[in-house]
Image (cartoon, rainbow, N blue to C red):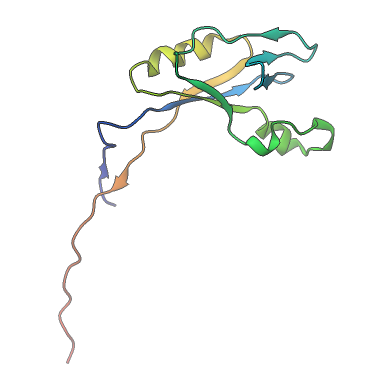
Length: 125
């Protein structure tokens, strides 16, 4: 196994992944979270250029009645996409404190395997 190469220092940012509690959804037009009774809550303490997005955009507007259990579960996964790495841990703590969030974590660091030059094999006669 090859050691990982760290991401570049000028990487734009990381995101905070989170899962909504059952019965919650996000209204992208209004930028608010909505509970199962229709009450709206604006997300507090999000960095200025951050945006909240569904991880599976094709399921965001689907009615739950027509979805399988797995699809309904996927509908609850979201992320806060950050524009820089400066406020990552603060944003994670803020997202974890939201009452509609079941769980939250930072996305893994990206890396690529270190390139090694191929070794020459002896020619067989």
